[in-house]
Image (tube, rainbow over all chains, first blue to last red; front, top):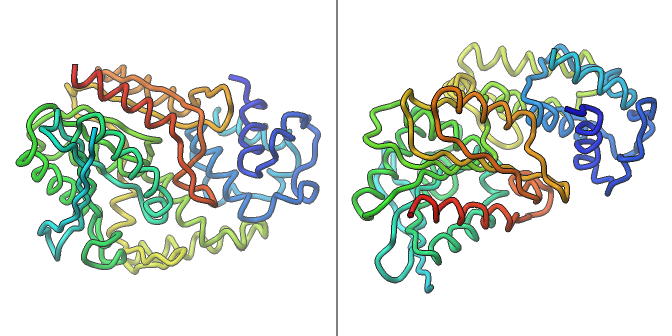
Length: 82
Length: 275
């Protein structure tokens, strides 16, 4: 499974980027750099990640630094998948 | 084929349940009961479900939609509903369908409706209907967490606050007090029932099971989660067929959307059941 590709597809869908996310690299910044990423969008991202990958993000695992870059988000998902 | 639509109430525990029946004019070839999703997803999906019910009826199926206790136009407040009461409502709808319709019967569900369907099948259900599950929620704890997050969303990025908002909600529910989230009163009993629910089928369940999900990409791919669920059920001896179709997440999109490909895939599944 290509986790980065899945994560980018989810980012694109939740933020309605119309395909822009496909060009993102691992070091592309997200939080503070992508204006569409507000707090509701963060919830949307968490929910979609949980549903498509099938894990649960616990309350105390939610941290702004997870959404710093594409890479930090991919690392988080890989960690959850074990 | 001509389609007729009737609305009526059936008597349930603590008041009446609102039903919509969509049926062909002649003798139906079989019956379908729809189990709706949780909270706002019911409203968002009404149009899509209505279109699907019409399409199923046009191909000869009698389709019953029942609003669960405290939902839609049924009696009671959402805040008074409990999980077992909803499972009993599924049984109520099923009894009605059995009494009014010959031929094969199908239990059709969307999102958390699939958890209710599975819990009903673990009760004293008298038969094994074919299952048509749209975007099934496989884990009630995950679904409850996502619902509670709606309340904590505003504080999501100020780390400590998000945690605090979530833990206040959970403490309240553990004490047995209801909470209010996104305009819905949620009783502790309902939260506990949803939290405990998971998508599993009774041992020896051999009726066909179809799991369909939508993917926004033009080349839809089965999500890793649905692939795993399919594998789990198949290992348990269930006859599962999964499919991802291209379409919008109509139960949660900002604007009301539909996913016609989901209806087409479902019609193909119904043809197989009727064959």
